[in-house]
Structure formats: structure tokens, C-alpha cells
Length: 233
Image (cartoon, rainbow, N blue to C red):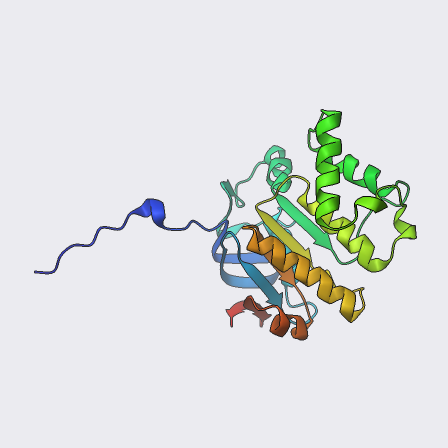
């Protein structure tokens, strides 16, 4: 008679993102179907596929920009199929988002861009705000750029500020949507190196990209959007 092996469930890693048989729609059209996808702490996940294949839709569903109506979709403790509108800001505080086009506020300097995020997410203590802003800028090697306006920065510098902004609330998950798309190859390489370093510190990173060279240079788990489905490579 075989011994019964008991599994200590407390030691089984729990995914930060857990999708099972999810369907994602845009304007009532199916973009992705039968999506089975999960992300664990410290993972570097590349999301690849042609333009229009559903990469951005999948990413936006993770921070409730696009609703999920079908299947099982959970991020942290939030059920994305039933999440209440008032809970979405709390979810988004735990997700850092990095955009291809930066989306910095052009009428204020770097410090004010970062302070705006902290003000919006409930940081009322000025000393704590200033300390956190200095911390993330130092992490990105940009502490001497806090007084600069966005237009005074290069594309690579702007993206480093965007990464700093994404780190302000110590997220468990960072989502990067084509973060190197507007950068030259050397600067893009630096940005992906930063994201890999962040993942090595235990933060999950999901990066949508077309840059296959980056995948070879900075290995991670690769998931492809193809024919309205996700394929793990």
C-alpha cells in the first residue's frame, strides 16, 4: 500500500494573477478566448504577438481598464469579474504601469509628476512623500533630474522617470506596454535591464514587446498572443 503524501498548501506559491478560461472583449468583439494565464512574484514575463493580437487588451484587463465578464480572473485578492468600481483605485495602487508614450504631465517637473501620484494615492505626510520620491529617483539614477520638465529630458530619461513613478507605491506587479518602442536600441536595453533588476527583487513584471533581441538578451517566460489565444513558449 502506497503512503499518502500530504501537501503543505502553505508552501504552494499563489499566483498574483490567475486567469482560467477567460474571454476578453473589445466593443463586443472577442479579442482573446480560453485564456489560461498566471503570474507569480519575481517572474519576468514577455507578452509577444502582432499588432492587434490582444496584448494591450490583456494588459488592460489586469488593472480593470477593460472588464472581464467570462471565466475566472483574479489579481491579488480581487475578482475581476465582480470587482466594484470603488475597489478599482485600490487595485491600481498595487500595479505599476509603464507606457510606451510615457504619459508624463507636461506642465510640471519631475518631482511634481511623482508627487501628483502620491497625492492621488493618499500620501498626506510631506516628509514621507519627499523621502519616497528621492528613493525611487535614486533607484533609477535620476535624483539630480527632479527639477527638470519632461521636455528637457531625453526619451530614455523620461522612461526612467516613468519606471520610478511605477515604483512609488511599492507595487507587487509592474505592467510595461511596449516600454522600449520609442527608444533607440541602447536605451531600450537599459530599460529592460532595469525591469529585470526589479523582477529579481521579487516584483512580477509583464512586458509587451516586439523586440525579439531583448528576449534573447534578457531571458524570461514568453507568452504569445496568436489567433485569439495565448500560447506559452
